Amino acid sequence: MTIFGLGNPGPRYALTRHNAGFMVVDTLAARLGFRFRTFPDREVAGRQFAGDQLVLVKPLLYMNESGVVVRKQLERKPGDMLVVCDDMALPFGRLRLRPAGSDGGHKGLRSIISHLGRSDFPRLRIGIDAPAQSSDGIDYVLERFPKEQEALLPEVLARAADACIAVVTQGLERAMNRFNPPRDMTALSDRGRCGQTSDVSDRVPSAGKTP
Image (cartoon, rainbow, N blue to C red):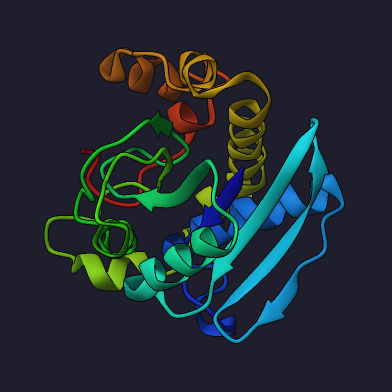
């Protein structure tokens, strides 16, 4: 399986919301002892894991050209894939695995769909909150997480890495059942304010307006 973490290259974007996909793949690489090799258009790490070849890829052509790298990598190493990216439609820390779908306004997913000519590929979305109504979405995703969320980011990334490993070892359906069960957002929000939940996405202050 190949896991693509989406983001923008360079130190300017390293800790921004839009680089959640890069962060998850980096977390996976550190946990599994993978080392990245750098090519002009991507960073790649891979070795045997759970009886199969696992490859981690970070496209380096900026978000809206992610599809170029994904297509080239799959031509070189065909097989199952998982795309990891940020999502403004989800509260911070919430994970959502899906077997297919639209781009949802995400330029990286839009590029992948365009270059592959299909949208039936699994993706893991990482919630980053929605911006305030007065904020520009483009500026928002290129900003760093606020301090309250940044402090909990390692926990979010660790759980997202767990989700990726579950997809590889248990299959997408079982991973979906484990990591994105239906929840009552209103009740969870109330519980989070009372400090009665351990779910990261339920106890982190929103950076903007909650969708």
